[in-house]
Length: 483
RNA sequence: GGCCCCAUCGUCUAGGCAGGUCUAGGACACAGGCUUUUCAAGCCUGCAGCAGGGGUUCAAAUCCCCUUGGGGUCACCA
Picture 1 (spheres, rainbow, N blue to C red):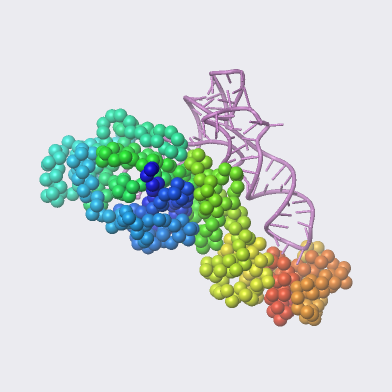
Picture 2: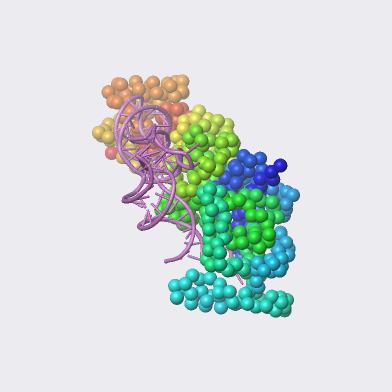
């Protein structure tokens, strides 16, 4: 029996939950599900300066919001815990010792000052900044004594001299080779006693039985260091999959400065989680039948690494908005109401009750939940000061509009029954009398009641707004048109 | 700059690994039209691409090489 597929996502809790994390999580989870394996969430908080619990919680919350749940993780536990590296702190020491014993690493007593000067010299000579191997020559027993005497030091990877280090990238379906001379003696254990990412992730991936490492392309250049570690430990390395990097519109790696990257921002903007997941699935991947709207489960059913691409896709908001609109319009009204309330686009379902007849009309006019409030605002309060000129259709005189609007007011005051059909019929009849195009009669009313030339269908809106409020707003408009 | 990755319409992509059926298909965006009560939605039409050069071959978007372009990475951050 083949070993169970185990994949993981290993975010660092040092900031806002990143859209790139969700992207990589999506492919990890999709593959795990397709392979009948497990998807693990591990928190990589070995950077004691920058890691925060708030950030960790936000990451978990955002991934859950997207429905990208994990089988094992810091909050749900699992057989390979703990799943937070700070809780695994005690584990790494023995592996460092083992590495030291096997000659895969060495203690380095160089001061940060010396390292910095070294690098400056190298840069000045246009050489690659990298460790010069000075402490490799310190006798191991001597090094141990100095370390035990409390001398500050780090532990570095001892990159073997000469020869290449290679690994296969499963997305490119090709080997990638790096000359060892090209690889730096990476710090594995920091002077504060904490492991760096490189050590901790290799040790944890091994301990957690990770079979496939699916991560972003930016990790390719540090993969040989990881491969060297597996070799030094005598462990079998996992398979490596390097996903293309999400890009800003200028093709650079997606970044906060040029593009919104926080998953919380997407949520606040009113993107639906299933739409965002679908959109992410469209980047670097395609369904075998070309479908563009698909659920996570459908993606899993069709999942195949051969369909994952290598080109870094630009994060295209136009397409995301289009997809989101598709999902938004497909929502049932009860579902839409729930989401509007839960995403705080409206105070309560009761307030939505009042505008129930127009909710479907608004639904088909918004692409994001956040657009609901601006569009529906006029149902709840009188329009703010709009330009009086908006009341006057092209090729009409303000004075004529004023008269027409006054006549409309009379019609509306008398309309019976108070239904949108009756209102429409009456106003159309008025337009006929006036020998105006119906639209020219509608627009002043629209602006008077909604404060805008763009709104949900007029008569349904009037019916919901109510007679009293409609008349009040018409009066306000007439005042604006007064000579 | 060294190393590494990538390269089909403006954008996301299909096709490429198993060359011919590709005068390169779809979607978003954009433009025009239909519909129409504004705005949307919907429907129709249009615009637009194999980065360049060599090679292999009867035949190359597809395989190989070079160039160019873009990106990543060179931390006691991940």
